[in-house]
Length: 300
Image (cartoon, rainbow, N blue to C red; front, side):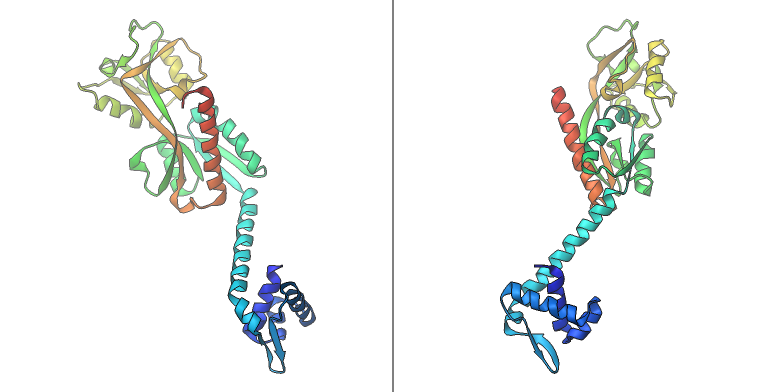
């Protein structure tokens, strides 16, 4: 049973005229009459009473009017949702991420997502913590992979993905031989602050130490590999996460902090846009990909 036939019958009943209904819906009167006859045949009941003054619902039609309205409403909802899906399936998705996530997560995430949206136009950009948050809030980006910072979360929805440990990174020649590196040892040390915004994750570790920790901080604003190279050449110490260090080879020591430090990584989406089909699908696909990635590594 086609919803357009039911809609046509309801329109005829509401206007009281087959001619008026045909004009409103863009059919010929003969075409509309044929649709009414076909619908009555399908349902096995006479739904319209035709007379000189027009048409009205029969008793059977009156009994079925509410189910018919519900049927038409459901069909229109389905058609609208399908149209949105089609439109978004060939739309654009703009993703922001830290360099380490772009390198280590994004290829697998996009590969899985493209199986569902093969025609989607996907672009991505790399930026700092605040750059990513601000770009999603302004609409410049559709979503971004970031670490969790409550003061920046206004107007955003958060989807947690992974807890990433922060590590002390020392030159291989450093005489320290412990299994974990006390935060206090950074006091008065030459400290290389990594990429822009990293102080939002690192400075709270120093502030929370039992005793005052004040390194001689140099803000590098370099990429991860460059900071590691600086440490490798004994130009200072730094703190980086396990994810950042993954896959980067260098002659350095990477040790857990004492007390240990972590950052929580996830995906941010504007609260205004959380209901959009493509974004919902991207969040779901990303969660599944990351869960499978770390389950395979045995780390989650």
